[in-house]
Length: 428
Length: 120
Figure (cartoon, one colour):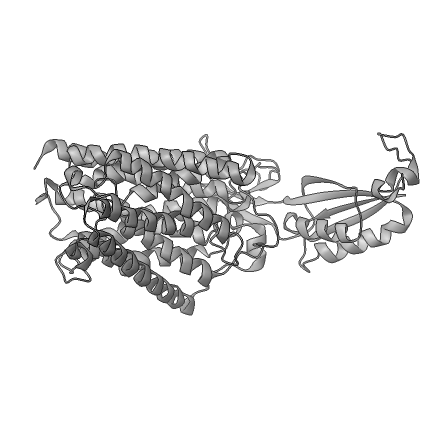
């Protein structure tokens, strides 16, 4: 055990946990105001549903001793997950750190189905997806499975997290179907400051995601940390230039997207490439994602918040470029194409392809299975009214006019018009 | 001249604007309002407080039109704003005493005739 490592991993775990509500705000700002709560909730409930799933079974399927495809059942219900050493930190802390990854990865997929998916069906999807897709894929790369054995480099989850979520998003958007207004009328972001705030908090949390993936407070953590700062900076600059060239203006939504794309792209590379190559990687990664995003908007695929372009394409770019820029003199693990090891690029491609195919097929099967017993999407009337009121019985921006109090502990008069809706201030 | 005032569902606004545009109605004003028209009230919960929302979000459209434009305007509104459920809204047609176009001081019929239609 190493106390410095434990301190850093405690911090990192909290940082990564913050990324999920941050993602909620990033996504929440991009939808219409009538769906703001529903969209943020899609991220926030992952903290609970996936958190529970991870502790009960997900961790075991990912990290218990098993075969090349999936982990065993020896850690079911956290059995055998105690204070014993896992590397240089207690295993229970390693479990929690990995749990925060499962939580955000599942929540990422929600961006493809916002504004029309039924909440119950979505929560069911979260649980099944983590058990049958996320946990095995994590095992492939980090839990002793075949991709790790093959030598695939994925520092913090470019393939496990981002290609995986992007592939699932592509299928989810297609299976759930487009929003009824998609392509018929303009659907505009209702709160761009939320989106920028979310992107900023994601960046902050991502230091824990990437530098924490060193699993120690060491030199590699420092490298991953610095690369996590530099790569999105490169992406942001190139993205603004692309924006400028295309529309003559630098957009705020564009900058927020660029930050996320840069973070996604550097995730697999963070502890494997030099800082200057990280900067280049971030800059290069802007291009495919930018054009994937512009192209997607012209198709019938309503991947509403562009999870495929940002996470799928960004993750693929990062995973492949890791195989190009990796440098043994920095990482003590492997060289990439530029440093005389062209094989690495091939291995990276195999990793991306395996995850892509498995995640797409698996997500399709899960969604079809859910649709056999429940409806995946809300009806047109509910979609028109917005999911905040119809799914949650709350409004993001309730004015309170016309709210009639119908149940209250000390109700004297049953109907009082104009009583404020918010209950802060003592009623609750 | 008449003033056509319609109160409609917010989610129908785009359809209505498109229908008015097709009917060649060019000048209009909209505002976001809240109202009550007999539709089912939905219930919201905030911690221990349960409330019935007696007012629904609506959009009010006001269109000042010359007499022969009244029927096309009303037809466009009726067709585009209808869902068949209670709560689709109302259309009121009101007499207008006087209209001025501020830019030119034109009055009445001239003031509500779209500029594009006036040969200059």
